Image (tube, helix red, strand yellow):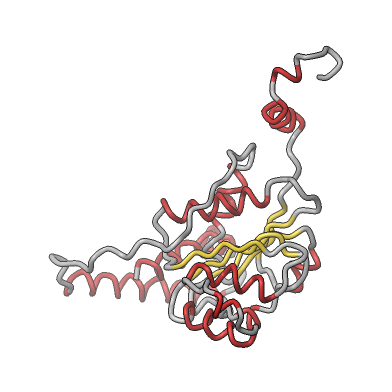
Amino acid sequence: MITEAEKLIADGPQQMNNLCLGGCGSKNYLSSYKFGKKVAEMLQEISDHKSTGVFEKVPENQPTTSVVVRPVEQPIALESTIQKVWSCKWTKMWGSLASMLGGVGTTTLLTKLNNKFSTTPNVFEVVIWALVSKDSDVGKIQDRIGGNFGFSDDSWKNKSVDQKAPDIYGALRNKRFIVLLDDLWERVDLNQVGIPKPSQENGSKLIFTTRSLEVCGKMEAQKKIKVKCLETEKAWELFRDKVGDETLNNHPDIP
């Protein structure tokens, strides 16, 4: 009920924008009527549930999310983007982090997001991070995803793509998962890999990084976030951190 109520709350600002005439009218009467009816029904349902429910005993805590924590560099000036992506993880289906250039931090960002799931309460049972890259084929992607479920012995790796797909599908089918694919250069066929299609019904998500807006389109990304280059001051901070003051101060021309 809380989850459903939160969805209504999230839709509230848009519905308020539809109101006019000091709140006495609406730009879309049917939409406003349906939304108001949903809110009224939800309030009544919650009231009934609280009055008749027994809350002395509650279910045990949700199992912790299965996520492999990955080593990651300290991000420079990516905190706001990380927060933006984190707040978008509840969008209906899937999204992308797009950048026209390499080396602007998309891998670091995706890795930080992966690790955040291990320390922050969330609704996902499984978090999968997999590097795709330019030279990866479906089989390599399957091996990287399969490792999360213990599918790593030689007998599994020697299976064909068509044989591996049902194994991955079976491991994910009844779980609420989020898949993080890093560095897509072309469309990945989720069915061929064995990843169930994320949907509003199953509550699962897909987030990927890419340098191509065309890939965003082919993957049907519903949310696109552009990762920009660093501002000059932050770029200089990162450069100094990598090069070191000893080298920078070695000769006055170097800075």
